[in-house]
Length: 116
Image 1 (cartoon, rainbow, N blue to C red):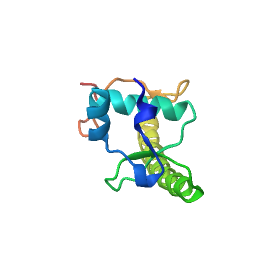
Image 2 (image 1 turned 30 degrees about the horizontal axis):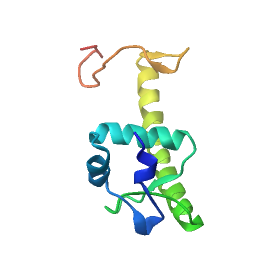
Image 3 (image 1 turned 120 degrees about the horizontal axis):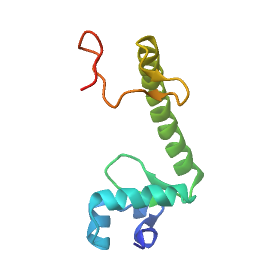
C-alpha cells in the first residue's frame, strides 16, 4: 500500500479516513495500521481530531498541536493504568516479573475476583 503518497502535506491538504479507504481500496483497519506503521517509521502524520483528516505536518505549530494532544492522551492513559495496576497488585493478580495481568480476563465485580 502506498498510503504515504495519498496523505496530503499540510493541514489544508488533510485527507479523511474514508477518502483514504476509497483511494487505496483498503479497509479502515488496514489504513489505520499502515498509518501507525508509517508513524513508527518516523513520518509525522497528524490528525487534529477535527474531522478534516490526516496530513503530513510541515509547520512547527502543527507539530506542537499534535504533541500536546498526544501528551494529554498519554497522561490520561497513564493515570488509568496506575489505578488499574494498584488494584491488580492489591488483589495479587499482577505478574510482577512482567508487570502484566496474571489472568486473561478479570472481574472487579465478583467476590472473590475470578477469571471468566
